[in-house]
Amino acid sequence: MIKELFTEKKLQKRFDNSMKRQLYTPEVPNGLFRKCPKCNEIVYTDDCIDAYHSCPKCKYYFRIDARVRISMLTDEGSFCEWDNDIEINNKKLYSIYRNLDDNDHLLLTFVFLFFLIIFTFSLFI
Image 1 (cartoon, rainbow, N blue to C red):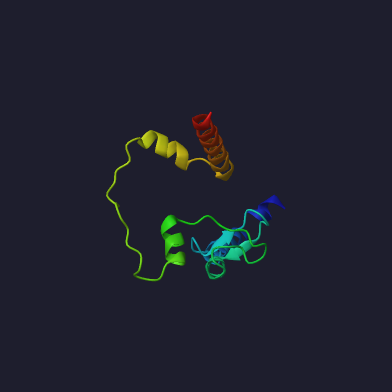
Image 2 (cartoon, rainbow, N blue to C red):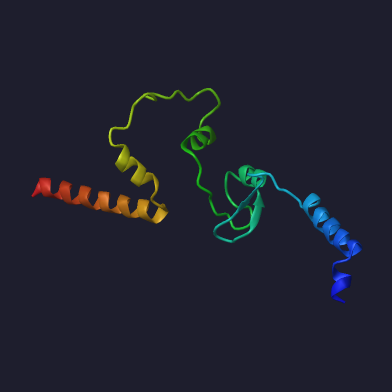
């Protein structure tokens, strides 16, 4: 029985099967599909774009770049960007801010608004 496993025909058949698996493995190009973090469905990217960057199944809004948002809101050719050559002074703080997730951004916004309200009321007292 052990000798039969290592005969030339069996080895050739195993080699052919592994080569077939390698040759016929489907490859999906990067960016063709997206996974929705809310409903965990795999969605075709063009369907998300047609639905204004939201999941067609559960209506979750995907994060989009500022330039994409501006192109969604303005007419083509009507937007003129100002001060696009401004450099960031504190790159370390900027990199920390970019790495925060949505909940942290929301918390920072609330903290900023809280201190703004406190400061405004303290001017009147």
